[in-house]
Image (tube, rainbow, N blue to C red; front, side):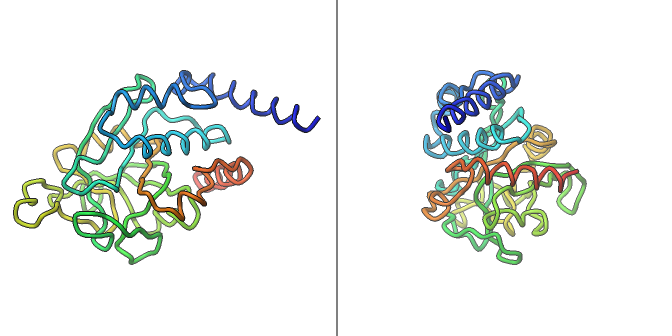
Amino acid sequence: MSGLIRQLCLCAAGLWLFSSPVLASSSPAYQPLLDSLSRAAPGLNKEALRHAVAAMQCAVNNGAQPAQRLAVIDYSLPSTARRLWIFDLKRQRVLLRDFVAHGRQSGENLATRFSNSDGSHQSSLGLFRTAESYQGKHGYSLRMDGLEPGINDRARERAIVIHSASYVDPRLVRSQGRIGRSLGCPAVRPEVGRMVVDQLKGGQFMFSWYPDRRWLQNSAYLNCKPQRVAALVRSSSRRDG
């Protein structure tokens, strides 16, 4: 009987997700959405994209509000590569592929170290939810909240935000072998900064990926632990409210 109840619960979750106008094309196995986004972004590491879609769908299946857009950063690529993708989930197309900085203590051209600690000046991995835009010392910027405890959930108190920065400049590669680095923020070029903030503000998903074995093995979202994720979603909703 317990197996039948579990099957009914899974079906109900799948029907709820299928009714979403944003993820209507995605079955509970998320393969159709993944296939569409993969075709739209052939240059994006398939494992990074698969984990991004799986984490997002796990969150939505367990109580998170669906999003209209998904940003994916592949930190396994060097800073000299266009390693930020922004997807329109409804139309299943790429809105932008561009450069993005990593934290100065995460590495030189390649980011290899990640942290959730204040003052680390390192980037964080995992699933984020974007929040409000604001005018700050870097101009038009975007706050976001990390959804993974111990991995990125101190993003807001660390002031990890999306902002423009003049040092995100591919012309610097010739002189220093990389673009500039941030204090942990996923900074973008000034030429695309406003577009990035406008497309991602107001509750979209952002996913930062790197083949970190410990995180891949233990993330509640990547391994989709329903009870744990549902509790995290409820906690995030109370905090936002």
